Image 1 (tube, helix red, strand yellow):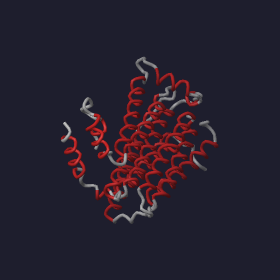
Image 2 (tube, helix red, strand yellow):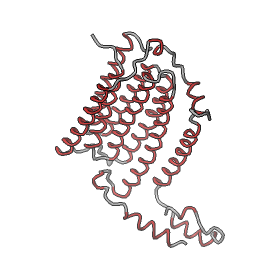
Image 3 (cartoon, helix red, strand yellow):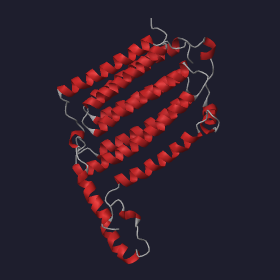
Image 4 (cartoon, one colour):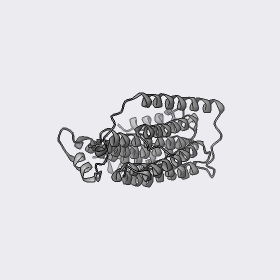
Length: 199
Length: 118
């Protein structure tokens, strides 16, 4: 899908819309609108990945980034807004600092890209088909030297600990009163009641 | 007539998205707004990995695997950050990060109750 005028057209279309939506994320004063713009940016990014020819990663981006993370962010915005989701205009000092840092980063990065000498792939290398879900799965679960089985397992542990940590941090209040009553009755053998730790 | 996009075009696009996220981090005061900008920057990093996989290491899938790892870590990070925000909002009734300058108010109470049940 890489060659041809169609992919060029889609590249510029997705690039322009994602930049415009990203500016909407950053510059808007309404957080809900920013989150909706972020959905647009991530969708355009998935489209760009599709233009590159990686269908599997594009699907994962839509599923996890848009379906999971942005919906979580929307929940957080709605839970933590007292009827108003506005944010006041940042001070001029903050805006100058942010713009100068962002412009400096962009200038340095683009100058590096301009001077770098990337290996230009040949046409037949670019024409390789990338129906790579089975290849990705084999790579993820292979225990050879170039496999990713250990990071894969570590990621699963990380997700589990993030799940438990999120529950522990965000739960409402530690049930102190009931626990103390029950502890005196029941807890001769359980010296370390697990719910006491976070209370 | 539009040029056919080369790797420099692609990388410039993702650097631009990253810079926009950087600007957002510097100007936002709401913690969820900062997290939105961070998601923008993570997205551009994923895009960079995929671009390099396409143009530089065209025969491998390592860039795609790394992109999957970045997405998974982003999900875990969003969960923990939002739990912290909800807890912070419950105590302070604001999410302004310039007000978030102490952590010991609750931790003292937590340590006391933890030590009182040896």
